[in-house]
Image (cartoon, rainbow, N blue to C red; front, side):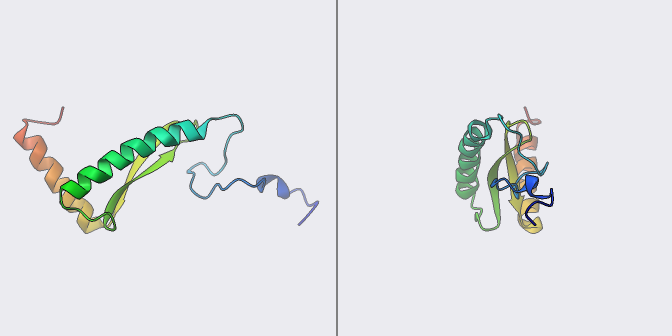
Length: 98
């Protein structure tokens, strides 16, 4: 509705992927996302090397409301359980996670 006062939310930004719902003007989200993407790519390569399928579990780059990079792990519950078992075994073999 043009002129209704509700247009201020639709300034052309895609906010569907953000947790807070709005982007803050002046925050450099791209720098945070680029750093998170490098880490997510590294984790995805490690997951592939450990025999996981990225269609079942993967790392996803994102940012928080302040523009800080965030890496989220998304996956099917059964596959995430397998990943948890693997990480627990590594932690037990090392005497605990460092």
